[in-house]
Amino acid sequence: MYQNVVALSSKTHAKKRFTPLRSYGFARNQGMVPVAARELSRLAARLPLAFVTRGETPEPRLVAMLGLDGQSNLLVGPDGRWLSDYVPAAVRRYPFILTQPSQADAPPAVAIDTEAGVLSDTEGEPLFTEDGEPTERLNQAKAILREFTTGVEATRRATEALAGAGLLEEWQPTVTVGEKRWRLNGLQSVSEQKLNALDDASFAELRREGALPLAYAQILSTAQLPALVRLANAHAQKAKKGQQSGGNTGKTNGAGSGGDVSFNFDA
Image (cartoon, rainbow, N blue to C red; front, side, top):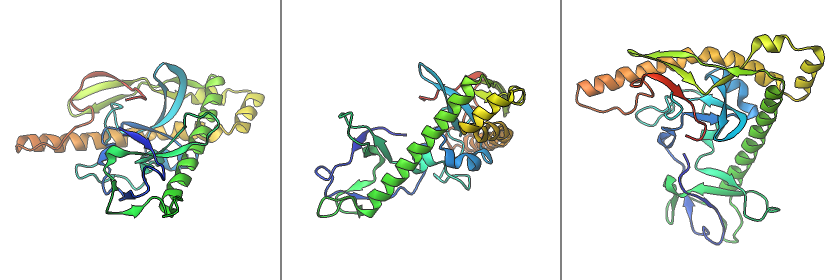
């Protein structure tokens, strides 16, 4: 989603004004997002959650699957609307993000994607007061970002505990969209069998680490995969009708691919 992240400063952006985005089109190519602890139950009731590795780092991360190819988002409609009653925090925070300044002891700074088209010299709300202090809008963004960062860190620790207990296993579901059938690779899930086989001491340790809610939520969330497949089929059918009528409704999120699809967190 982020293309050109710049830290906000009262010196550089004193006169800049902010206009909220009216479309989720910016997330159209975001096939998965990290999960904050506080939104775990809401996401698990709507989307499949899975563990993926990030680049060359072997440590798994919990993500919410927004599509079937890791690179496109089924939850964004052709008109930019979000096709669900809950928007993940990772999407809601855009175009703001926390960045770490070059000074190691400096606190994280609020930054913005300048390619989002939300900054103006004349329209919108100011980000800084005349005295150079953050406005309520900017303070609100900072609070949301801090809560999200804290939540993702809590999820990371819980995931680490599950992985350390040897509870993660490959999850390779097969999906069918239109006439194409393929297997999803690069995903992991909690093994319910291994979880139930834990001794009392290991189970208690996971409870102390706050990992049990995550484990059960992830297991239950896999039941949401068929709904995501149905949405992919709906997109594919709409795209096919558009092509037949000479139009173009955009990507079908894997409906035109075959074989295996590998998920990449960095995509």
